[in-house]
Amino acid sequence: MPTMLQTYHMRWICVLFLVMAPLVAKSSPWQVQVPLAPFDYEGPSEIVTYTPLEAARQNWSLCVAYPHLKDAYWLSVNHGMVEEARRLGVSFKLVEAGGYPNLERQRQQVTECVAEGVDALILGTVTYDALTDTIVQIAQEIPVIAAVNDIADPGVTAKVGVSWVEMGAAAGRVIAQRHPKGSAPVKVAWFPGPEGAGWVQFVERGFHTAIAASSAEIAVTKYGDTGRKEQVLLVEQALKDVPDLDYIVGSAPTAEAAVSLLRTHGLEGRVQIVSDYMTHAVYRGIYRQKILAAPTDFPVLQGRLAVEFAVRAIEGKLVHRQAGPVIFPVVEGKITEDQLSETLAPASFIPVFEFSP
Image 1 (cartoon, rainbow, N blue to C red):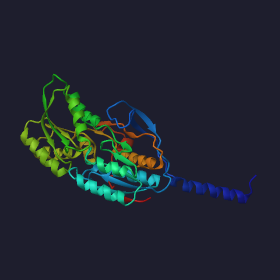
Image 2 (image 1 turned 90 degrees about the vertical axis):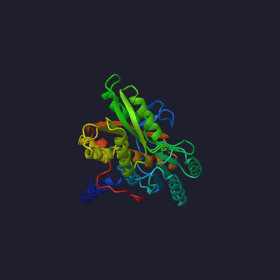
Image 3 (image 1 turned 135 degrees about the vertical axis):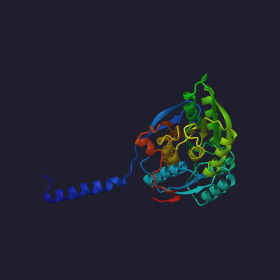
Image 4 (image 1 turned 120 degrees about the vertical axis):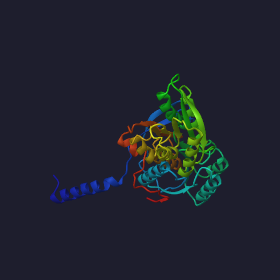
């Protein structure tokens, strides 16, 4: 039987354990889609329950590169990376190229960031294959994780992302289900994004395939950077080119610009809007019935997964060379709180360019 002093000590040990226990951050398993053949977004895949590492072996240093921070999509990716870096106990420095046309700026940023002495590179690329020579060179020294935007395979250690063919198809199916082949034709203005970006060619293929079996026809296509200012000009031009449009479909900044412009031109309700990915403004638009629908590829979760993959790659613990969330179409605001937290950063979150645990 323990003495009074032993009982006192045991109680304090229990209290100390309860106080310290929350400091050991654990993450619940994630449902992710894994292709059976790595780096094959269009082949067969399986949904698996993925258990992330509990902690990094040490405070590794990561270089993170984004194409831009012009819309809240990459802000949500950033939030996921911050949360996962904090949980695992690693550091990162973030650079962003300022837009998809800025290939040479991203090349310089990545080269300089890696030269500072980091343990891995997480790259959200502005281009599909124009950085290949740089990536191959960097990969001789450290792991390279491609995040969100697809990229040519050479030099890439692992990829985190979803099929942008499927993202485009998810947007296209919204229209195809409303206007099956044989019904009255409808005119669509299509805004794929910047030509040459690592995701645009794929989202285009998916969208075109999905509407092929419908009565929808693409009346006008406008390529351009995903900055709001650029998209406002493009949407304005499309409305002039095709005054009797039925749908505007494109990136989140396209959808955001369209909401304002349709109100200005008195076209609310007559022209419908579909986004091919989710941001805070797009979600508000869906909730307020200004935007018809958008798929989410869970950018917060992608940010988490990219950091976790980078740590695994550094420590030689990679289980999969490619994985990403399971795409979910959001129509009429139907999304759970858990799904929303893996999609959007908190409203108070601001970009974090340097993080240390």
